[in-house]
Image 1 (cartoon, rainbow, N blue to C red):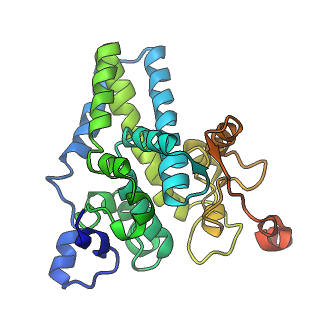
Image 2 (image 1 turned 90 degrees about the horizontal axis):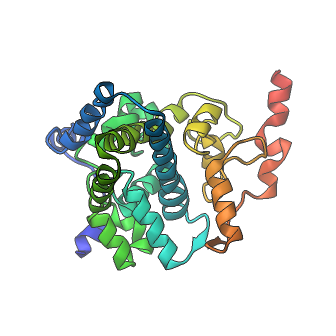
Length: 300
């Protein structure tokens, strides 16, 4: 790893207009695999579906969604709990099968998002650049292709995590081969391609829709919102306003009625000793005065 990679800024670089436009334009050649997966997933219209296909698709969607929410997001991005080096590697490995690049790439850009949330330097802000950019544009452009090494030096010190970050395509390719070997084209199309497309857009809704649709319990400086439907789709990430109010909490559903499946799984893992030191929101954030209940009740 070169020193220039560790110090090169990605999110705050003043560039000439022409160069900035080039970096923010879609990298059509590099995006071919992304569009290819979408096109191939339409093969399910030809093969049809069995109950086993649908179950496999949903299972691998939520398994890998947890790898993103519980691993890439709550662990690698926010360090909301602790774990051992072996389970850390497992979380990173499972996360790569979601085809959202490596854990260091993901965490680095996400940390930048929180640093500049809904401000001009935000990675994916609907307020700044619209829903298309927040949902897909930033992923397909050239500007954010490199890993932002400056922001992830805490985890970049692990050589196995750096290796996974570099070779993040190897685990999903191996998983696709395993699906085909075990279940043929049906398993590959439903458990691989279709499940991945749904997983992508389910994850991306938090970057886009959760900054536009929903309620705001906390008066944060950004547009983050709480949305039950997005929380169900993303295993708890839809409680986005909660998350932006206290980013390091392992639970994003702050109250018992806010369903947060990722937290329930992490809580179970803490009971069996795989994770520990789970961080929770401080008590004062759960009061009526802080959370805005009183103002909402008056408005009602």
